[in-house]
Length: 451
Ligand code: PFF
Image 1 (spheres, rainbow, N blue to C red):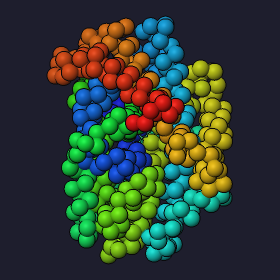
Image 2: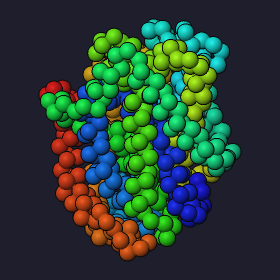
Image 3: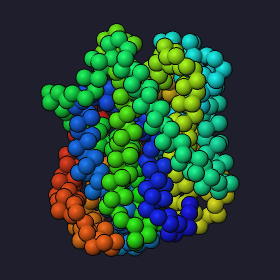
Image 4: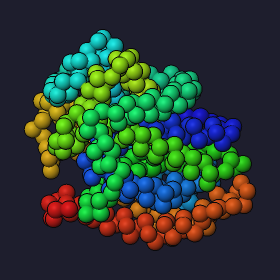
């Protein structure tokens, strides 16, 4: 991690936080959830949550970090001893996410290698993806490679070099995504997909959709896991916190929206209107995009570049996940950096294996129809993160009080435009909402009732 106050200007801060925020969550996870949960309905709920709840929580987390100058593990505790547990709970989230994040990162490298070796036609076949993930050693091998690359960057301390590269890659990723999306829209049947993606149907709104959108919001914006507290601790007082948060949100949401535009209409075009294709889940991007590239002029070339860019977006996010866990062990157990990194590497390696094998040899492990990877994803995003978010709201709303955060936001120019929205959200709306959502999620998990 950088030294405190390392972000010399606001842009540096926004880019670094966006480097953590923009990753597989935007490009891989958002489109498959939107496809699965009613397209426009999911999109609308996501956008509403982003500008109200996501905004408020990100303000709170970054301000907490900047105020205390500490990472999450110590920040909550330093303001109120009773809330030390929240830092530990927040740290548990990346420990669960990181291993399976690297499994997907491995899939990205695999597809890059397929494209570069001319296997596009094969990859566009319906059974290719399933054939690949149901294997044993191949997906494991790519997972090991991805996690080893991440660990190498963290151990060698060359994150800043990677971040520099990724900063100029991000705009290219945006442009390429737009090109692919525009091309996708010209395909036969894509318009129907576009309508599905942007037109909400109120009858589709359910607790499950809201929960999925909320989990995605946390995941995509790196919230409810302490990471933004840590980023905030590196931010200078003279950089405007409120407008930084807006920019990170616009950037993160914009990329997710474009990724959906790139994938969902194409799903319609290639499935010939068969709606079951929409519920492909984690495999959606890997099933759909090869078909798009295979049908496109220069598709192989564009595909190769696309997967390289996604790889870098995934790598910067994986680095920030691993850094968070490494610094947790350094702070808590007073271990050195190398020892912590090695421990996290081995732990994640062991924890990631079942997620990787869950589509093949461990396919018999299933809970509510979910594979091991989906279970990890569900536990972190739909259970732990809402709990962390709930306690963060209680902490800010009733223990330290929203005015403390508001004062921190105002430290730059005396202004906090959305102060009333923030206060109402953090104190009243979000906690009740979170409890309701969490209860329904747990009830459905236990099979008490179907949502
Ligand atoms: N926000 C990242 C994504 O959307 O891919 C995932 C993530 C990265 C979460 C780093 C948390 C984190 F610390």
